[in-house]
Image (cartoon, rainbow, N blue to C red; front, top):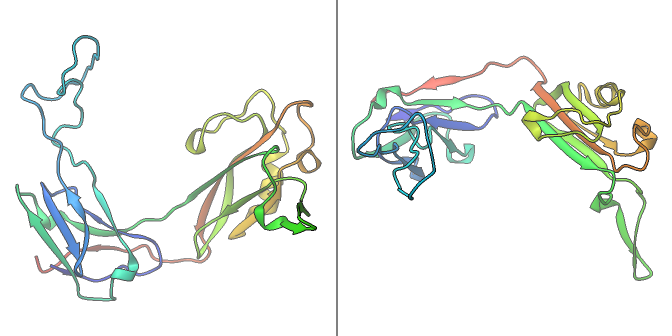
Length: 233
């Protein structure tokens, strides 16, 4: 089948969730194998207990569902129109439900402690010794091209907990963290801020502080999100 390339610069993926088992190519480039998880003879178990003797069929989940649904297609492999998708399908499936989509990365995160080294570009060698013009580490946030930082969803200078999607404040937290990050970063494609007490104050003396930030990116100007279905199947 043939399809047109979606507009814009966002990453392109092909949704293969309706297919069974096989391989796929776009314009002669192999994008991967696809298959569904095979259920054991007793089926999938909703309630799982790992205790007892080992069994390879124990605690199987998502039986009959695809191991992967979206397959990335680099834009360098695509032409504006008439892109060729070739499938080698072994067990069946419904190719009419395959779709070409774009994916936007809206969330960016950063996690930098005050005991990290300063940025590598600030170091230089003088008289055989390494020196740096920057005493403190620097945190950087950057959205994809064409996107700007629209909001700071989380910011904490202190002892934040968790990871990008699950950040939470710890026992030590500078109350001005969010306002400082918003002032420095909102409306920008990228921003940098020094991770130090001189910027955020010292919420807990004699404790190594960390700056954790989660920001949301939005298109810098109004654009249309493409969702192109396949044709000529």
